[in-house]
Length: 449
Image (cartoon, rainbow, N blue to C red; front, side):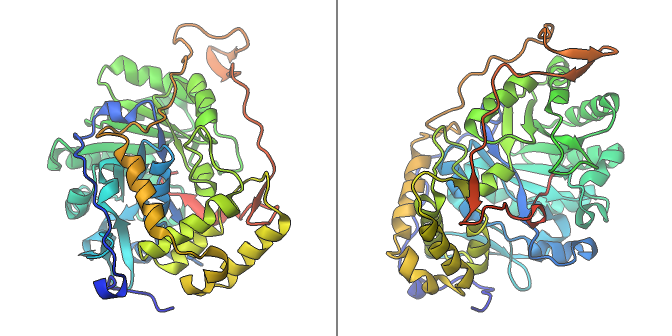
């Protein structure tokens, strides 16, 4: 199937995508609180030499579709982050609206660099990869009418981001980091929020100094991935360090929301995370890539029958490029209760062999994408003009700032470990469309670190 550089014509897909009916007020810091957020993620499996990728090549490599964000919203995400898009890349695109589906694509030379749908605009945060205040502002102006806020990537540790001084490289260049945030805040209208996503620095003192400077730029929210630049996914996130950071931000009195990122497994697990850290919200990356319904108190199980076919149907309905839909569909994995081994094998093999949507008629038809879309629209409409989903995150009894649990050990006055009063959920046996082993960790990156 050839890669499409232009949207389909109405004749090729005779249907009209339903537009959102409700108006939402501008985002505020309160909208970043008491919720679960979808992290900015990009697919890395398509890039064979990420270390040598230029900004333009990196932009062409972004394949995370709008589908995952839409399903995350349907199942309870309060806000969703788009994948990191390098400033220079978006500047060389053309904005095209599909007259049939309503999907908005910023087309580069051969493929979309960024794709969205108007229905997600009230919840969508656009993440910028930049090392230049002027370019960051230009990039923001390109898409400002299609998003509700901007987030600066200050945490991606991968060379494709840091080689140009972006991502985690900004952590050791706070003057540049803060100048970009300051420029964005000054250039963007007040109804568009500005935020940043960072990683921990090795020293807690240095982290607090950086956080203080970031908060003083006028950001609305700050997301902290609770790993350092040198830590990788296989290493446990040190979420206990965030508690002091949250307290520090609250003492600054500017109302900035602090969002935890790192090792949050879903709705129920977010309660543990927030109890330990005191964070206003939690952000989910890997768990959401594996199961976009994890934002719900009752996430779907047996994804091969309850979710994957629906995801593919929606992909066809919205004319999402097949390679993108195919890749994401093969990453989903979750708990199995009733699926047979043969069912899993049949679906997996069919997806792997398929070269287009038509090749999946036997396992996915009927193509009820219109129904899938209607359910997403209905779920968003039920929010009634508010960001909070129908099942908002329950109140969490955050550990009091001045009182340390008796089980908490300290070394030289510093917190060594916090034992959560809520047991960590046990992770049941999972499979990747019938495979017992999880996908390689290198296939997907939370680009903000």
